[in-house]
Image (cartoon, rainbow, N blue to C red; front, side, top):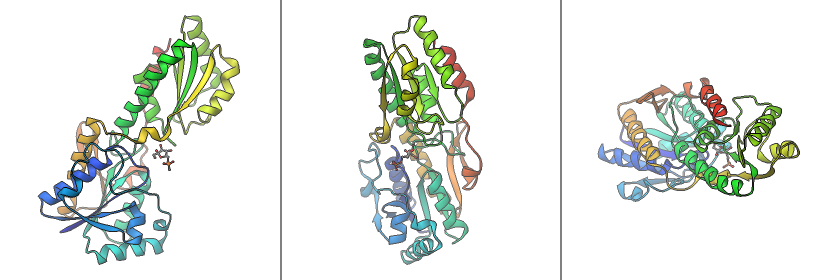
Length: 322
Ligand code: F6P
């Protein structure tokens, strides 16, 4: 293995740049070459490649976003698109590929490995934390901290005006960001796809809190919750609660800005591991951090197994709410 390709794909996440840096620097250290691919699988299909070296990644460990740009590519899902990608990989004499991204990116990485025989390694980069095979994904810790800061700030104004705030955080199919930011922000209630919630119960709990002297309340809702997003929930409950209600949708704010130290360290370790695996002749796998140890799993495990939230943490939060 002499030449490694590298791309970021899907929704960007803080720490992707730290991982890019780690892959490039580790490859240089091991005397391998690195070819960056711009805009994820789209760049692979279109042949948008750029040779990189140590200086290409100077000063990016602390920068959010991804230097290599990212996209979601429909063409790559077709056999024709994949053939074009493989032709470009061969033309550039790339021996193996590192793919940084989430669930969809892992599917792409596995297709290249299984159907076309290209060694690939996945690095978990998504704020959603919804990938099996790693306790945390790169970007999750940063996104949670951004949400917690928002909750803290909202608490100040909510209390001054005796209001209920409904804060929507990202997570299209998972409630990890909602759960962790909600617990850390000490919110009154949480709505996450993993725990079916009756709005009637939430209204009742808000009422109890009010009677016990609470002057403000905050609900955190994951965007993928079955009751709908924050606007929808506000519409459903605002006439039934003893608070004036306001809504905040955090949106893409959670995906930007400098990664936390935890995300940078995770990204650095996983980036270096991915290079080691390719140089040792491996492929078709993803790297992760499980129970305090760095782990390698076959790529399909990442989507065949479902990472679960901790229901005890959810219940613990409820027990703290009043
Ligand atoms: O998967 C990461 C994520 O940020 C989700 O939480 C969110 O639903 C989605 O991406 C948003 O995608 P886009 O950036 O395309 O609007």
